[in-house]
Image 1 (spheres, rainbow, N blue to C red):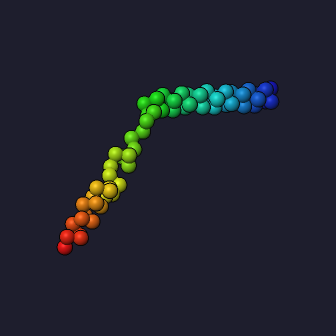
Image 2 (tube, rainbow, N blue to C red):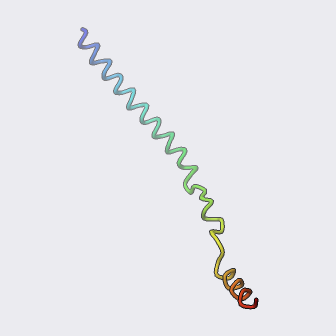
Image 3 (spheres, rainbow, N blue to C red):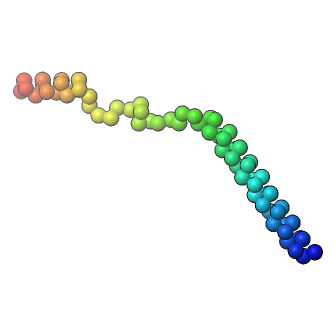
Length: 64
């Protein structure tokens, strides 16, 4: 009887962990639907002076 109870508890624990993992996967999938394209601020901000700025500064420095 003790062996049956032990194997039943092992099976139940395994089934419970499988169910828990399935719920976590479903929750993560639901969250990821909202975040298909994450916000990346580096894509929207200037990274430094561009060619027009350099051109303007080069002309200004030669006049001095």
